[in-house]
Every structure is written in C-alpha cells, then in structure tokens.
Amino acid sequence: MDRLLTSDPPPHRDLCTDCGVSRTSQPKRCATACQFIAPDYPKMERQVHGRARRPHQWDERFFGPYQILYRASLKQPSPGAQWTGITTRIAERLLEQGLVDAVLTMAPDEQDSWRPVPVLVTKAEDLAKCRGMRMGYAPLLAMLEPAIAKGIERLAVIGIPCQVYALRALEQELGLKKLYVIGTPCSDNTTTERFHEFLKLLSTKPETITYLEFCADYHVEIRFNDGRKKRIPFLMLPLSKLPADFFPLTCRTCVDYTNVLSDITVGYMGGQGQQWLIVRNDTGAELLSLLGDEITLADPGSAGNRLGPVKGFMRNTEQAAGGLPVRSMPGWLRPIVGWLMPKIGPRGLEFARARVEMKAVETVIHLQRQEPRRIKSMVPDHVWDLVSAYGLQRPKG
Ligand SMILES: Cc1cc2nc3c(=O)[nH]c(=O)nc-3n(C[C@H](O)[C@H](O)[C@H](O)COP(=O)(O)OP(=O)(O)OC[C@H]3O[C@@H](n4cnc5c(N)ncnc54)[C@H](O)[C@@H]3O)c2cc1C
Ligand code: SF4
Ligand code: SF4
View 1 (cartoon, protein in one colour):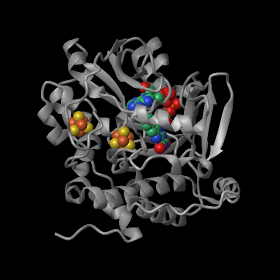
View 2 (cartoon, rainbow, N blue to C red; view 1 turned 45 degrees about the vertical axis):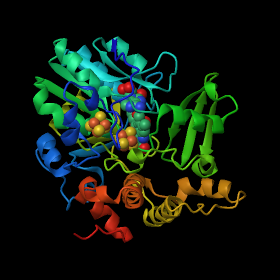
View 3 (cartoon, helix red, strand yellow; view 1 turned 135 degrees about the horizontal axis):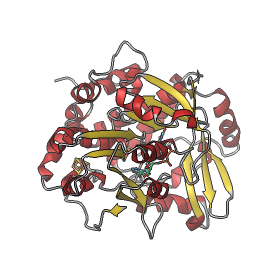
View 4 (cartoon, helix red, strand yellow; view 1 turned 180 degrees about the horizontal axis):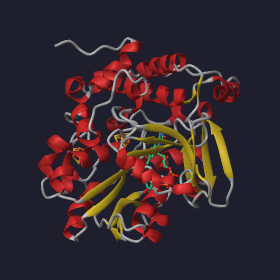
C-alpha cells in the first residue's frame, strides 16, 4: 500500500476541500474541475451516465441519475467497517478478480486514526485497514499522477462527492483503460482538528472514541475502544456549544450530497437502519454483481412527511446564519422529542429526500449571506428546483 507522503498545506484556494487537484502538475485545472467554482452537473451526468437526471422521475430530482435503489447489507458484516462494509468489499472483489490494478482510497493516519490519508492499494487484503469513516478531507486525487506513473491502467476510486466531481472532470485526460468509481454520500464534514473539538464535548475521554455515525433513526452512535456503545438522540447533542465556523463554508454549501457522478453510491440515509445503494449505471450494476450472494438486497421503504422537518431546519438555519441564537427546546422536552422522531419523522427514502432538501436549503442560505456573488455559478438548477418549494428563489439577472 502506497501512502501519500506530504504534510504540506495545500496551495491557497477559496472554498476548497483540498481534493488534490491543486497539488498535481497542472493545478490550474481547479478552474474547470472544481465543484465549488462553476460545476456543470447536467454535462457531467451525461458524460458519466449517458444522460442527465430526469426531472419527471420523482426521486432523480433528489438523488441524481440511477437505475435502481436498494436497502442492503452484507450477510457477514466486515470488522471495522462503518456499516457492514459494502464499500470496501466491492473494492476487495475488484482486486481479487483482477479487474483493477489498484484502488485509491483513504486509510487512517498512523498517529491519529480520525485523520484520512490517501492510499493506493494493490492487494485486496490491505483494504481491511481502510474500512470505517474518518472525519476530515485529504488530497485523494494527488495520488492520480503517481499511480499512472507507476503503470496503473485500471483503477477503482472510493471517494466523497467533492473528490468525485473533480475526478470525473479529469477522467478523460487521465488516459486510464478503466475507471470504477465507488462513492459515498457526504455531509457536515469538517477538518479533523475541528472534529476532535466535537469529540471532547461528547466524552471526558475523547481519545477512547473509535467510531461515530449520524444514524437515520435520529441518533448518533458512538463506540469506545473497550467495546461500549452509546446512542445519543440528535436533539441531545451539544451542537449549540460548537463555534459558528465549526463546519467550513464548503461543507455548508456543497451541492452534491449523494455523489451523483459515482457508478454506485453506498450510503445509509435511505436504508432505515441498513445500508442504502444507488446503482447509477451499468458499471455500478457490474460492481454490485461482484458481491454475488454475499449481500442481501431489498426495496427501500418510505414513510412520514419531510415538509415540516425541512421547514423547521430552514428556520433554524436562517436564524443561525444571521447570527441569532437558535431557538432552543426546553431540556426536559428534548428526550421525549428525541424518542418520538424515529417513530413519526420521515423514514427511509423520505428521510433521504429530507436530508437532500435540507442540504439544498442550507447551501442557498449560507451563500446568500457569505458569498452572494458565487451563487449564480455555484448553485446548479437541480438545487433551485428543490428549494423553490420552500420559497427560496434564484436571484434575477
Ligand atoms: C465525512 C463523511 C460524511 C458522511 N455522511 C454521510 C451521510 O450524511 N449520509 C450517508 O448516507 N452516508 C454518509 N457517509 C458515508 C457513510 O459514512 C459510510 O461510509 C458509507 O455508508 C459506507 O459504509 P460501508 O460500511 O460500506 O463502508 P466501509 O467498507 O467501512 O468503507 C468506508 C470507505 O470510506 C472511505 N473513507 C473514510 N473516511 C473518508 C473520508 N474522510 N474521505 C474520503 N473517504 C473516506 C474509507 O477509506 C473506505 O474506503 C459519510 C462519509 C464521510 C466520509
Ligand atoms: S478542485 Fe480540489 S483542490 Fe482545486 S479548488 Fe477545488 S477542491 Fe480545491
Ligand atoms: S460535505 Fe461536500 S464539500 Fe464537504 S467534504 Fe463532504 S463532499 Fe466535500
């Protein structure tokens, strides 16, 4: 396994998650490859999937182009995986079957297991070390040129949406014989340094926390190094204690929650406690088929109504973005509402639609306040389409 060896700070860019393009031999490609500059999703969707999302197909408005959605889990969950390990298992199968020469993904830093470090993996057994979710971003695509220089011609990349957008923008000039893209959704990311501040609010021994996930049943699950688990309702989280800039503007204004340019997206939002797969094109279907009967697949469910929660989220975001304190619920009511939300709130696909709409609303509100001049080039039509239901309109002119 080759690790990216650099501790250099990235070249300065406004709104940048250091996906790695600025560290390549042609850093000027950021201008056309960046999700935060002038993304062209319809063009990129056509390039990758052969067509843009179909507005008349209801769920493509939220999740981007796809062939089929599944609720899924591995029959034998992989140790150390974030959920059951579908993401890593697909990549292992690619290497085991000799379909790729290498997999580009993230491993934990040797000193700080929460810090992602880009790695190029050529042996299936080494992928076990990459399982699990780390908070932060790291220059994944800075390893593309070294990989190609090494003679890698067939590559799989596991990435989050801002990395995958740039990867797809560069794909044609990379000259690879084959590229497989396994994407995960991503939201509310921040730097690893800042994430450690959050861990300190959750435990008096933050260094013992080994796992954290925001689950679709409105709880955060935390695991400790002695095997203990703790589940905290979202409403009981100490979020009001976090500084206003805890989440960087990039991650508050990111327009691609579900990783629409991947061949297959592996998440959990629409999975009601299981994983959630978005098979987007024939390559994604091929990737899923590699798992054979190792995987259980079912139709995703959908229940509840997202309208009220999205409107409530929008009110809170407007107040918080305007510097006003977010109206807080009395402490005694929080556990009761925390208990009720998983039962009456949006669930399954409706939960995933709610989260995508919340993200779209958040993007527009934060850009309006902080970077109004960037709205026109940064916010794609599909985001305007989603937020119009909540009274947010594209600026005129
Ligand atoms: C910051 C972040 C936020 C996320 N938010 C959501 C969300 O809101 N909704 C949702 O449905 N899913 C989200 N995901 C995806 C989710 O956490 C799971 O990773 C995904 O569902 C796959 O689970 P798995 O068991 O198949 O993964 P595993 O088999 O455990 O594999 C996880 C893969 O993700 C890679 N990875 C881990 N951390 C990072 C990172 N920081 N950057 C890039 N790659 C990384 C690993 O290297 C590994 O290849 C998020 C992921 C990240 C990294
Ligand atoms: S393309 Fe990547 S490195 Fe360049 S500005 Fe965008 S996020 Fe930063
Ligand atoms: S939330 Fe968006 S911008 Fe931030 S790291 Fe995730 S994909 Fe990138």
